[in-house]
Image 1: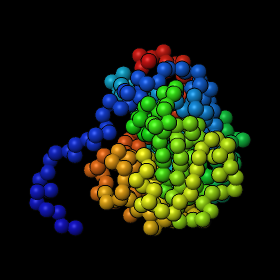
Image 2: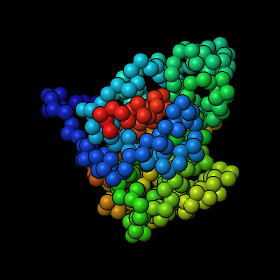
Image 3: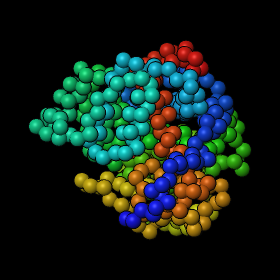
Length: 359
Ligand code: CP
């Protein structure tokens, strides 16, 4: 690559995009009355599945995240003296770094494992035994593993909470929290007591729910807010994109889900477009839906937002980055604050946090 001379001399930082200020988290914070009770129940609890989170708990997590994001100058160090074991046995950019950034901002210390070959796993140590050791060394574990079952094999041995940062094709609950936090910063009025049908939103999910952990957890959490979602359109090339029982579970939550293969035909009616093109298949990552791509030329609604939870591939053109549709950078940034909220509630009693000047 030849770097032009004017770029070599460039000294200024790129300006922040329009979604980066404190106005939107502040608006969300102002829209939500504080109720610490649902958060108290999170203390010392594992976070494995999106199913464990009801609407009241999620709303209060979004509120605490918005508080952290909009008032950084009031930040205290509620996790000072606590130790996070950050165990990522599969590659990650945004999940690992946003968890670790969240933990640092809360004043805690970290032990980070990024390669299972540096642990007893390389010598055949069982996950249950590793969990037993983790009990002795930290206060909470964040685990990324490409096997669905790994986190479940550790649960019985654990005396400290574990947070699922993605287990195979099963779940990624904290990513779904980051996704919903972004949607509600975009439209705080969706959390009002009565939302007129004209304000209900239509969400397009480009992906395969049965084989993508981010999509699986997102759909489950959207189910907690189904009354303001007119429809979820799952857009993919596959005729049967759900795993066994998945569509029925979403229907039981009140989510109206439809399948489509026609991306450009659906786009003009979608308020939120969520695109995920990577799934863990067998023992590797695979790009899926090669015909399903977004660019500035796509027929998007003028005020539609795009979310993208993973590493960008060809499915998301960079010419969207400078448009108002780009909420994927805000989504990645907001992940720090929602994880701060979750970590605080998991590791400390919420009352300790609520008594600080953060309130
Ligand atoms: N959202 C997410 O899982 O991205 P990473 O793989 O970069 O952590």
